[in-house]
Length: 500
Image (cartoon, rainbow, N blue to C red; front, top):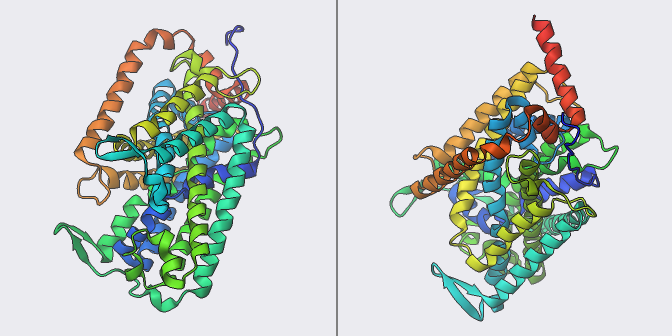
């Protein structure tokens, strides 16, 4: 390792509960507010609940791989470090490139989603039109709120991870309190008979797309990864755990966040379906916002639901912003992107230029609106799936090549669990790429994904000189840090000697 090489270190200020709220806050968001009634319409309460349970079952093996690797390799950029430890520079770069697409595009999307939600619930936010983008009207009140929110998120993340974590924890607690109130009221004052029929009867949309019965179940199952996505924000900030933090507990937090998300979604499905007959509920213009008012006349509870959803959107934005900046920072520190991205602020110990970069993308959201962002979010889902596949094979390879590597958390089943996780990843990925799947991407979205991959290949080729400015040994140090680097090298050497 070069004696002149200095590895930038981020501030270590996060506790285990901060990580839990980071992952859970990113996962819950507000997708349930916008899309859950449509899911219930497709499959019925029981069919939808079973789809979310099966989705969680598929994700748990993947979460266990993440848990083991996060506890073993707690570095900024998470997956970038995992794949580097297992396969080296090429897969690490590919993983980071895909994560930039997945996380960075979600930041402007979440900002715009906040304004859109306000516009749907409060008509005053859809006044004072400014201009139109592909038939999407940009209204000044929405634009102003979105810009204020974007700037606030950038500021608090720039001035320290502890501030960002405090905001995340506060909003997550507020969100969970709102959830607890309306879910408890739904279960307590709802009627079981409103759940019937438990499974939606088969029906067609536009004479082609079929829902209800098994078709409805698979249609909902195909999009459950979108609802659970967010647990993987935890490893992005793993390097910033406070001194003395239990890495074993940190690892378990990922799996716990998936289980907590599954518990919430299943309870939500039954709670809202019991308040009024669900075939009537799904016909409401804004079902989740109007449910309690329409069924019971409880306007206050409807407001609680709305503000809980708003808090969920902001926690998702904050979590994805943290994740995106750490991925960009890790790529810069490894000399796989411009070195500036790998620099930190001397006072706040946060990624300086990575924050500028992701912040600029986030601020673009209010200016361009949904139409230009939405297609990229679907493409980002495919990027996530491919990254998950890479993590599973990395967990398996490290088990084979370095069985003695320090693992504060060891996933049950070891190599077998990693294989199961990879199969689950392939099954989930198939829902996005197989044309017959209800969740498959459009040809234009496949083209966009191919374009991003092409850009990544071009960047890889033209940056060869910069990439080769440091040796493999130095890059290993920059990605993993000295302690993890030595531990991994010793474990690999030990296994080679035993084989010989």
